[in-house]
Length: 268
Ligand SMILES: C[S@@+](CC[C@H](N)C(=O)[O-])C[C@H]1O[C@@H](n2cnc3c(N)ncnc32)[C@H](O)[C@@H]1O
Image (cartoon, rainbow, N blue to C red; front, side):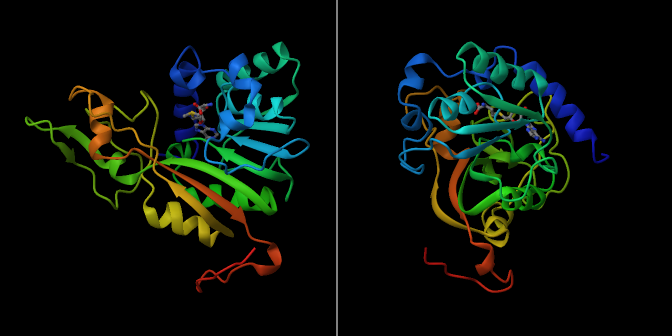
């Protein structure tokens, strides 16, 4: 697959999903009453983000951007899908909020200046690009020293599942070291129709983040297990394989850049 092909296919897939899918859920009036709490039940964000520069990366759809803007931040949204970005624009205009939208891919943020953001917030989306380190290095470049990077990703084991056997056991049909786009699978619980996806290993997800100039301050596995869910439901699947990982990382000051060959401890 040529370099641009995954972008073309994913743009088309997400333009379709911008039309009424669960990912195109705009922030409600109630959510906007306490936007920081809505965005962040874990206390990862500062009490106030007013006046901060926030990059909502691959988060088109009118949820994250609107909440940050409602909390007084200066918001930029970067997304591959014009359909998703139009939802941010429409919702911002309706609420008289200011949100800047940029149509671009997360692995090329060359239109953004070095050290221009205090917070980078990225929902599940790194699975749509082949080279995670390229994304991390772009985020490290645009993030200010001490800035926060909040991200959520698909777990590799979840990406390895291809189908269920006759006893409803989940079958790992894709190798951990699989390179290139993931093959289409029968089990589409955590895959988006028409999208090209890639498996990112723990070495890249967690180690890559540390090697890119961040320290990880917290890591969570959002619980999607539902003990009452029928076997064909994604809540049943979540009892066996956690689909996501969420991380809070902080940009190391450039003066204390780690040597990627040596483990570092940084005391803030
Ligand atoms: C799971 S949705 C997240 C958006 C949504 N606001 C949410 O949290 O539910 C993933 C987003 O990633 C975007 N995306 C996919 N590939 C991308 C890329 N290469 N660069 C930037 N955005 C991308 C999609 O257009 C989509 O808006």
